[in-house]
Structure formats: C-alpha cells, structure tokens
Image (tube, rainbow, N blue to C red; front, side, top):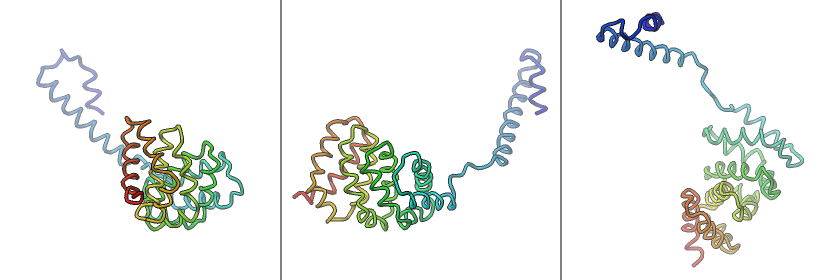
Length: 213
C-alpha cells in the first residue's frame, strides 16, 4: 500500500523514466499479492449442502398440491445440487418419491414446467434412476411439451426424454408409436439456427431411427 501511495504522490514527469518503470512493476506485484491474500480470506461461494437438499425433498414430498410459489425455491435447491454434481443427488431425488409430483407439475403445464423439465433432464443423467423416471410417468408428461413455443422448454424436454429413454427399446418404440418423430423434425424446421436444440433433436432421431423401421 505504501508503494501505491508513493506512486500517487508524484506526477509522471517528476521521476526518471526508469524509476517510473520500476515503481509501476512494484505496484503491479503488490496488487497481485494483495489480491491473492484477499482471495484466501474471502469465503468460498457454496451451493446448497446435503441438509438443504434433504429439506427441499421433504417439503416437496409432503406437498398435497403443486403450488408454484411453494415448489419453486425447493426446485432451485434440487437443480443447484444436480448442476454442481453433488454425490448421489439424482439417486436421493429418485428415492425421495417426488418423481410423480414432478410428473404432475409437467401435466399442469404452468410456469414451473420449464424448471421441472430441466430438473428431470439433470436427474436422468444418472442411468440408475431412469427406470424410476419411466415408472413415475415422466415420459408421458414430457411428450406434450415437444409442442411448446418456448425454445428453452423444447431443449429441456428433448434432453429429458432422450436421457430417460436412452438404450431402452420399449420406451423408444412407444415414442415412435406416439408420433414423436414428426414433432422432432418440426422443431428442427422451426428453429434451424438453434444449434443446441437441433443437436438434441438429431440425437433423439438417431436413437429412434431403428425403431421406426
């Protein structure tokens, strides 16, 4: 800090060029040291812990109605835990028994739907819980959202369905029979500039191609 004050007490023309250069280098080094020290003492930003996840799961599991204002903050905690890849988060969510509640939230087709679809997509990254997702009726609840006008909803829905039904011939056959292929093609035609969305649709179509033959 003394070097910084010393530098401020002179004008650039009051020192020789070499002295200015040395002083600037010294100030830069001091600034880096101070930044590192402050970083060591700055509290690390942390997402919700295991306890917060348990509380959120309990709150959702005892909900008798799917009320947006009540569920949204709990869904935020679930999503944060999943995105931060907290150990066994997806397994704990599936075991908690809230998957049917998530399916009902999707069927209600309200402002929670997009957030719920994203939570389901992240849960379905875990292969061991995909069968539970199917049994909870999540695939059937997701399919109608492939006709959404919101591109983010389409993206979350496509990812969720693709992950749940990955390597599951029975579910893929069911999707073909329910007319999912024309919906995926239509999405790509409507939003050709949305690369992530087009990629999700192409991947789903590749998985379903053999089923349609």
